[in-house]
Amino acid sequence: MTGIGDPFCSGVSVMCCITQQCAFPKIEGSPTCVCCNKTIAGGGTEGWKPALFEFVPKFEDQFWLYYFLCGGVGLSGIQAGGRPIYGMMQKELCIKQAVQCVAPVQNGIFCSGVGTSLCCWEQMQFPPHADSPKIACCGWKMNKGAEAATKPAPFSYGKPAQAEMA
Image (cartoon, rainbow, N blue to C red):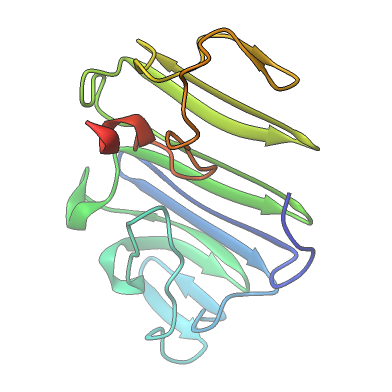
């Protein structure tokens, strides 16, 4: 959950060689109309800087098939300019979600996830960190020695927080 507005809806994604971006209202620096990488209407694109995790593309970093009013689709080299092979961030009114493809094993961790749904927070990791509670419910912990120091954070995908403790 996030605030409504600024923008109301937005999205940026990279899927192999395809980059898509859309936002309402349009993001600063968006041209009005681009067709086959030729700007037909609109001004400069220096202020166009949507973020996809650590990747912040520049408008000229891709060949735009089209861009009209508040969104478009472009092509680029696979992982060109530091872009992920697959990543997506989307916000619709007050709901925000994100996905990022990362290496299969990072710091000895095969899979991990973190998220929130209304007032419920969830976190998982395999294999579990030695300090994890293993099972916890309503304040009860199976592993009483588990410290609160291992705190994964929402929207820190692909970066297991437990790896920072090692």
